[in-house]
Image (cartoon, rainbow over all chains, first blue to last red; front, side, top):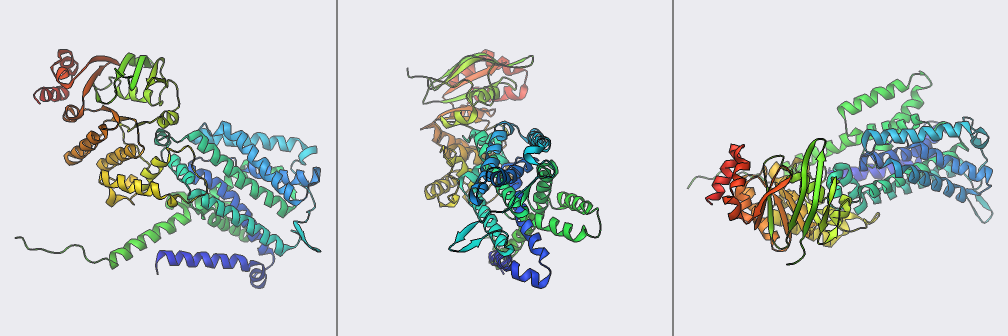
Length: 338
Length: 259
């Protein structure tokens, strides 16, 4: 079996599984696991915002929770304070996350490495404490609860996220669309520019790439991904809370990305699935489940610096090379000296 | 005489107490290959760093074809057509050889398309293939640049300079670390380029310098010690003196004098 057909098979299998979830999972396990999978989808989109920055542009952000939080609060403010319907509230969440990313990005992307990491943390801490202290507006730690407006109406039929199956497919569709957009960007000229900057920003500037502007574009795009995931999470939980802006949430996205495979499309999905499934299984028996997370992160950094998906890719490349060597005709032929 | 391609006025750069470039007035005419030589620490690479915007001068001005580019950012200077190679070879190690060339060509455009597949740009693709042939790296096109030998990386850097279609090319020790065969391939390529592009080259290999330069400028302690044709430089007493402290360099000048 070739690499291509194997990976195509896996992709088709994964897609079929994701579509079958609302019927398959309750039959095999329990309805509860459908919502766990929904949560995995949302958080993997959040992790891929950290992945876009770290894996493709070389910026390690520990502040993506800020844009997740803005996505959440945009939706909650829109519905609860402004009385917006579903789509305008969704848009408000995404736009406010991107606007915030643009604002902090203007300062942050001037810096690189540890300085960049520190400033992203500082920004998210500032707004975390602001959100916690402005309790009348944000609800602080308790957050804002809201009731869901319908997504759309078709004749007399009303589609709303209160229907768990519709909610699952709505979130699956939005997350898939975002992954598809990210795939297009990564493989576009802009994406190559990102990779060039991650590889060697000095050389990138010497060939004429505006490193600052490209990093800022990437930062706002990552803000978009985090904002969409935050907005989805607000719809999913019917509330927004300042707790999700804390830097621990940002850190989780980085850990999931690194364990899953930074710089790969599906690394964040793999990492997020792994950790959330572990959390759900272990946390009911043992309260210190985050020890397992820490241990896995350490093991991944030492033994699989390119993450689980990176291991898979290396393994596939070796398999390819072996197949090519086996199928190629022998190159060396003995020849008698004249 | 036509406007100088590159001209500096009172260019000065200090690092703490060390004056790397000292009140330098240099004027390089178009259509010729200029070599900048001088002992280590003479300020050659600092001069390139000032011209390409990696460093800001403490004082003085830099003009490119009459345009004041002092204090411009590196990418803006690059977009004017001033391209360079670096002394410590600098490519994109994780990208393939072909992608290194591809992104370098693409960087000439102001706009990088965010959604179109990168592979769909056929004009860029054929230009990459052509350049790969020219620099003799076609067989290594799919290899990650970080896995190439030092000489191949140096060749790739020259390829990246070529595909960026510069109007002024600054080469910082381009043949350093190359095998003799690679060196002669690189020298042939540089000669070929010099027919259409203005070139300034920093080089320690005097065979290379005297093989391709039309004019030579000798720097010592950040200032011009001598400048002129290769023949005048080879005979210049002060140039010999500047190299006397370094016997291995003296050999080069001796050798060059008899070339």
